[in-house]
Length: 154
Image 1 (cartoon, rainbow, N blue to C red):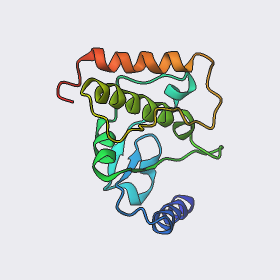
Image 2: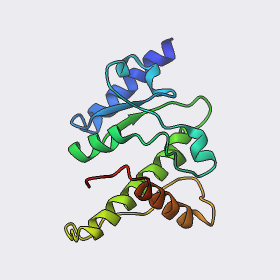
Image 3: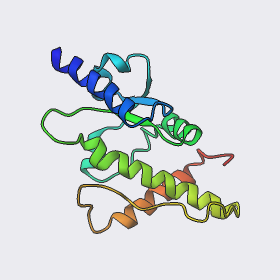
Image 4: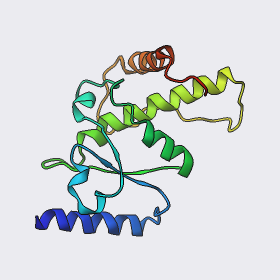
């Protein structure tokens, strides 16, 4: 229990040190909600196994995180791991999720002829080495979202 309390104190100090208090805190259901700090915050569900196989989950869209990030300019996601520097959700799953949603936004901006801002970042930023066919996969995930009909009024 002491390590969880220490980690919760560390999380609070990171928020304070980086002056990102205005960003909503979102705790990952997998491990992030272990911390008492996260009991009353927003929650998300990023499963590391999605990242293990470099995929995007249509079951765990985390639309609330997308909404919070668009309203406030970002979110602070809390997660944990036992044995590694970064949880797998941070090294693969969340970077894929961000990349796919940025590409969806870019696609809709183009269809709606929205030109400002001129640059919208659609790159995949991951500390892990992605497979060679990752670009094709990312574009397939974007197509799945668009063809699903879930976005009715962009």
